[in-house]
Image 1 (tube, rainbow, N blue to C red):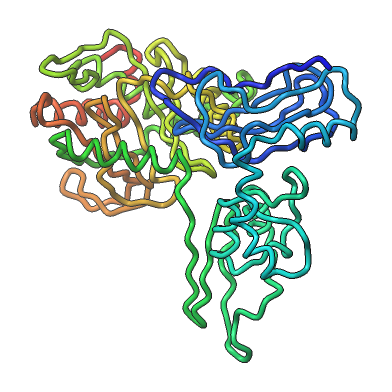
Image 2: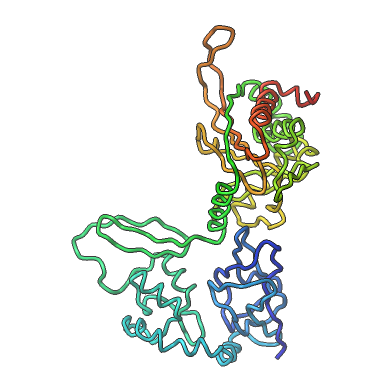
Length: 421
């Protein structure tokens, strides 16, 4: 037997631990080299773990839902084994704590009455929370034990309990289909569903609270007539798409306008480090992107050196990666300023929260036709309300307001971007 260890990839310095999601292979099953065995969720990204060698899954060291650290061994592959022959060996090699936990899970198993399987402790709790018995779930663990991952998969798949839980004749509303660990309690016409935060969601919550508790956040607003940008975009859209293979969107204009303002007022691009103000001589712009797992902020590195086409291509790439859960840690690390586009969802106005350790963030909203006064006349213009939140500890109102005005001027007269005016 030649054993190759499957280890957790090297995590970034800011990530101490991660969570295993669900194994795609069971002990005894054949594994191809580079085949994805499991996904690992950190507080920033979801990483795929490929098989380092071909062979047979000999042992799963850490079960679904386990907490792991960098370089930790989570499974073993027998490069000389044959499919179907490694399961007994893996079962024999099961750690003592797993075997010792069987009696503790015997009660839920007996309650099901339909299978002789037993549930691991974490799985037994989830079974009870979801009004399920061990007989309702197919076990994938050693000796047919039901794991936490088995229960999570069953709940996500809508498995119903064989026990009578809901009183007959009581109408119920369907709970939302959430592909995340959940615990549902039926309360007649008032159902509830308990869904634990993912590591990413918990990290976002932590950072937002950190931002509000450590920064002196103030928000300034301004309105922008988007007609010049819209006219320019309409005029060159076809030629731009033909030349660069990507559509000319609005975000590239906002990024260019932001960089334009940051050059004029460098403190907007700075950050606080203890009692020092760090002025950055580069412009790494974070673009807030929604994903199935929560908000992520990938970074446009050296945005001042990027063309409109470069920005549009990179943003499109970020959007696809975010949807597929493929963004890497390095793509979301750093950043000197951020842009959040709530207008995508129809937001009229908001007060964005600063992304630490940055000191300012631009909020972009929906562009709508509104009545405005020009030269004493009421006219209709496509208006967008911009909001910039800033850390008042280092940014005074003057710089914040003038910075936002610089963005407004660049958007209302894009030619300023050509001459750096």
